Amino acid sequence: MLLEAADAQLVLVDYQIRLMPVMWEAEAVTANAVRLGELARLMGVPVWGTEQNPSGLGANLPAIKALCGDTLSKMQFSAVEEGLGEWLRPPSKAPSGNARSLPKHLQKPLAGPPPRNTVVIAGCEAHICLLQTALDLLEDEFDVWVVTDACTSRTERNRDAAFDRLAGAGAELVTTEMVAFEWLRSAEHQAFKAVQALIK
Image (cartoon, rainbow, N blue to C red; front, side, top):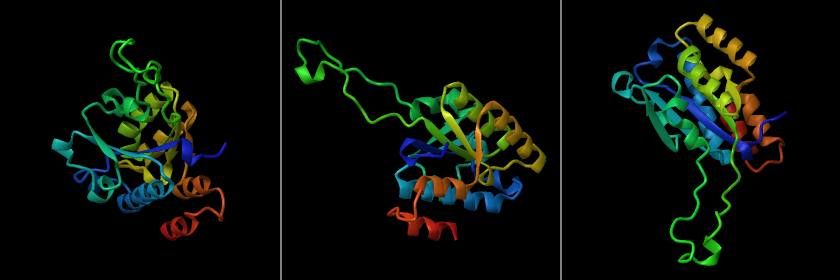
C-alpha cells in the first residue's frame, strides 16, 4: 500500500518556540517538518498545525506556522479531543430551510469533494501529543502514517517507544523521502523537479 496525495492530509503537531530547544535532534526534525509542509503544498495536500498550550509553550515556529492552512490551539494532549477530527473530516451539511421554499437542486445534500482519509502526521513530543493524537485518529478510522524523521521527544528512548507503540496499533512508519516519492509516483510528475530540489 502506497500513499496517495489525493487522499492525504498533513498534520504538524506542536513544533513550538519554547518546546523545540529541548527536543532531541530538533534542527534535523524541524527541517524535515518544513520539507513535509512544502511537499504538501506542491502536491495540493492540505496542511494543518496544532499548538499545545500556546500561552505557555509559544506558537509554532514561524516556518511551520506559515505552511499550515489553519492551526488548532489545544490543552488536551490529543488534538482529536479538541476537534481535529472535525477539521480533517468535516460533517456533511444538509441544506437548510423549508423544503418547499428551496429550489429543487438544493433539496438534496450536495456532493462535496471525496473525503481525505489518510493522515500523514509528524511532531512533538512523539510519546505524548503525537502519540495520543495518532491513536485517536486510528480509533476514528483514519489511515495514519507517522513520519519518523520529522518527529522527536526530549529523549531518543521516548521517541522510539512511541514508534513501537504506534506501529503495534496499526500506524505506518515512514520517512520524509518516502512520503515525497510516494506522493509523486513518477519522475514524469509535473512537481518532480521541485520536489527533488526540496529533498537535496
